[in-house]
Amino acid sequence: METSTLIYCALALSAGCFVQSTVGFGMAIVAAPIVYFYEPRFVPGVVTFVGLVLALINMWQYRRMISFTGMSAAFVGRVPGTIVAGWILVYISAEHLALVLGAGVLLAVVISLSKVRFKPTPKALFVAGFTSGLMGTTTSIGGPPMALVLQHAEAGKLRANLAVYFVFSCILSLIALSATGHFSVWHLKYALIVLPAPILTTLFAYKVQHLIKTEWVRYALLVLCTFAGMAAMWQGLSPMWA
Image (cartoon, rainbow, N blue to C red; front, top):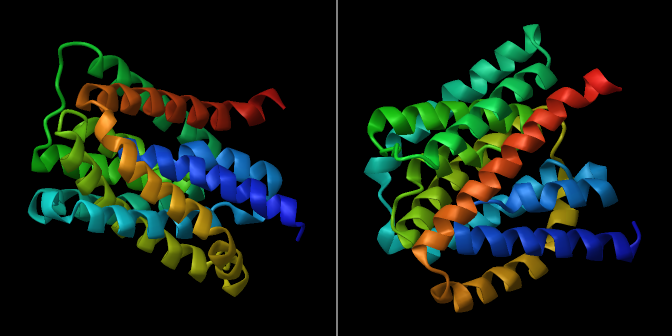
């Protein structure tokens, strides 16, 4: 593999890690399309592994703000969401499901901009975890449902709890990818090669995150969710226009 390809992919992953370390999520939204352009075989396996390492680092960084009890409902919802997505895809194409879920995310963003507040109740977190499982399995972008539910949390708690959720989510995804042959020793090797740049960028993000206000984090979340919804809808509509 050309060195330039590895450099471009490492830079894309670094940009995604910077966004996620300062905002709370967004690594896959930023990095995956660029990485796919240069090396399609890195998506989703390599991106997911880097996402796991990033989530572990963020979880350690914000460990004092984690609420495992509060996030338990999201963990419970993520598992059946993943299973149901796999079952649905037997009968419905990934594109059609991505179209519906993308539209749902955009609707949730519109509601968030109104006076309606999403409260992180156990029921809401379960639904968010379930929906995240559906989106993550079909579009590789599972963060928006969780981010929308947690958007009004204090910035540090938001980053902490999303990090915990992403550790759990990435482990599930890597197990599934390994079982289906989409994550192998080959993927692990190249993930480790590009990993130093994202880690250094993450450490740099910690140095500047104090400059970012909580309200800015919320609006950044909504912008990222909007892009994620549009990307999912684009994925669903593209085959129809081909």
